[in-house]
Length: 220
Image 1 (cartoon, rainbow, N blue to C red):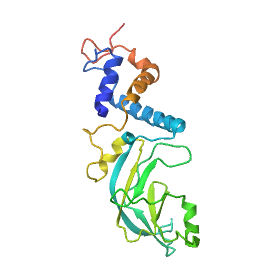
Image 2 (image 1 turned 90 degrees about the vertical axis):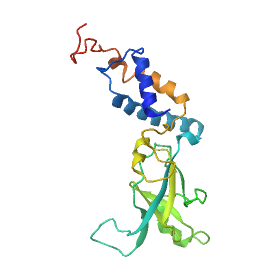
Image 3 (image 1 turned 135 degrees about the vertical axis):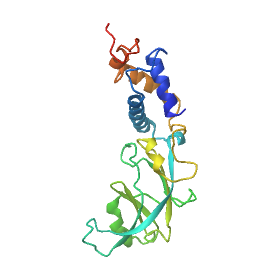
């Protein structure tokens, strides 16, 4: 199902199939709540089971790496080159003790680059066996790669808070658009519908529609 299909279905259920052009509940509001509940259910499911279904995952495709100075101050370079993605990484769903990034690696989607904490990078040159291996780390919303070994692009997959943010990423086959299947298993739809009907949209769903089609609130 697409996000539009899920939202229309929820609206029709709330209105018992009697919505009209002067509907008081906007689809944008329903879509916002669908995303909110999706993130909450994913976090709860991961905390309970520790598993991530592939139907939640989205692929950012090939992200270009550029060489920059490690200094966080633009006017105070420290002469230490690092590599970072040109595009920022969209915000991920909040997991316990880890990023909801499911894969970081080469463009084949098979050669994984370990994702480590930023503070670990300063110790890597002293690692006897893996000091030359690539490592990835996040600072704010940018992904950096330590010792990329000449890689100009990397592939990143993850579970993101707002799947629609991926519309701005140039990738083949995996990016989101208005006609894409919404990355959410069908079994979550019933829970989201029940949560919205009994929560945020409960008062709105009981409000009066404009049955006279004059764009004014009808009197009870």
